Length: 134
Image (cartoon, rainbow, N blue to C red; front, side, top):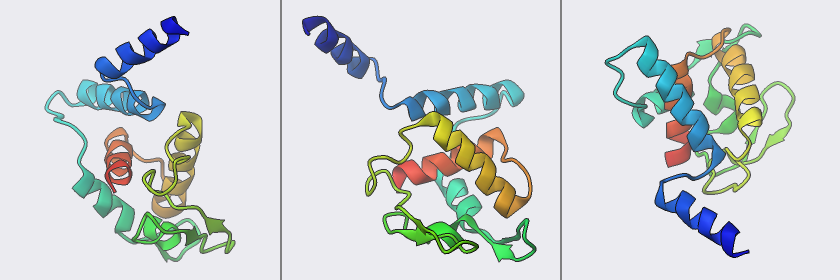
């Protein structure tokens, strides 16, 4: 037990936190490799990506906020299926951003729904920064 607590304490001291932070660091590393002038992800840009409307894959104007709402601390509803979506903000929903595979899956799916393409590394990082900071 003492070893576990020591390791956890060391992780906190060194700045390790949720698995999403490791994923975001890998996105940042990719972005820096592609563009050496990359300075970091931007929540303002993430909000713009999240709220801007586009002709989505089903041919109608849609944004991420169309389903998740503009208030990420509130439940949303899928515009196509009417299924209720739990709040996206990790401050309102502790399960959000806790499973990297799930985050990757939904980023890919939702970018395809709204933008009809996969998001870039920077777009993903910006959106995740916006969501984390909401």
